[in-house]
Image 1: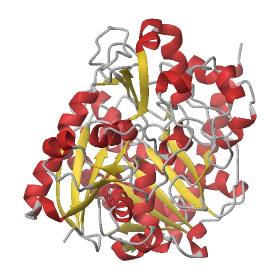
Image 2: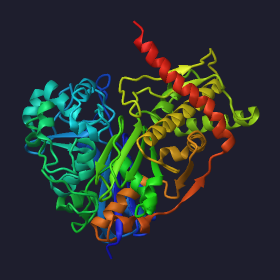
Image 3: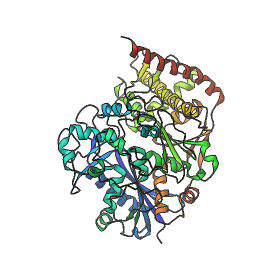
Image 4: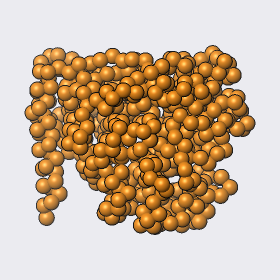
Length: 526
């Protein structure tokens, strides 16, 4: 019986695959690394064929480990970062790199080469930008496409397709050039609530009048829960699956995680009291509403990006897990930021806090904007600030800086949530998923520093789960997304905020806001 699902998540450094049953139980998972090239500052590139090969290896391994025959797989779903893949008119790899290597055909989401193009588009004030917070980030696809056309004219001349990474994966799986509503609405300024969804005036403004031809873009998109088609013979052989497996439209990774943790409450009005926090290399805050609530610095609102007749809104931090890695790597007592080293630091912080009654670095403060401020300032030029450093180069000194960096990250989340409240959102419960659930410091701080109760899902791979939920509908395992959310939700463990500690962080939050003001004052000095 075909009632199992395969979900694939492509992150910044790896391809992960999971096998789920119809009740949302994760039976097995596998992970394979993917390559990243950094040819120059602010440039980051992938090899899409390397990503596909890692995907196939991870899927085959996960299905084997699950111990179920391939004939039991009903559907496969893909989620990925908003990276941009280029192909020529014959479907071959096409360089997006200043090195000229065709294998470097993918601009990674965190690449900031297109910061000038993003600023240029943001300055236009075009009405399309009302659905991206009034501005564009260099992480979005339009600025990246502008950069390619301006700086790599030969690539543009040869182009036949540009894909969001999740759409590239469904193309490899099926041969279909159909595009996901989730990816195009969230990352390509496609307005799913309008007809036509592509705004010709905005494309002209960006100098991309020929984009639909060069990128192979369709007029219509495929919403989550539908099937793009079944696996091609070639893809089925490479993945170790059967050609009868349905392929769900691709998802943005953070939105898959949001559905994974909020799916159980998705069919009630109470959904709007819940918000998802997906924490990894970066962090995303994602919420669903029945009515659009636009606001500056928000990504969205996007109509139907995941749930039908719902709007999705996102805020985020560009570097969180990456910031903690950076702190470990740059400190004299640090080193390569391995899982073991992070664990030793976290354990020592717990000891120091127990010895000293909680706060171990009251005069040390961190603004976590080391890779710009995605929300709520929408300033990709913003930089991090550390106040209160001494000459301490000891391991305990590293632990204190690490702790205060965690505090800064959590206070940044509070800043985003309060900004969302100013636009009419009201959140009582924060559902946390992603790699941050493995860091007890962050889980505690997300409750205490934001003043919200936190739920950590029982299924730690909520990103994979959300992708599996949409695949379950594409493969007719469940009737619709709401039914899949109810049936596959695994519940979670609640961490309630400590009112006393929440009160203590009020002082830190006032200083956090003061540091933001002081940073702007310094920038304004002649």
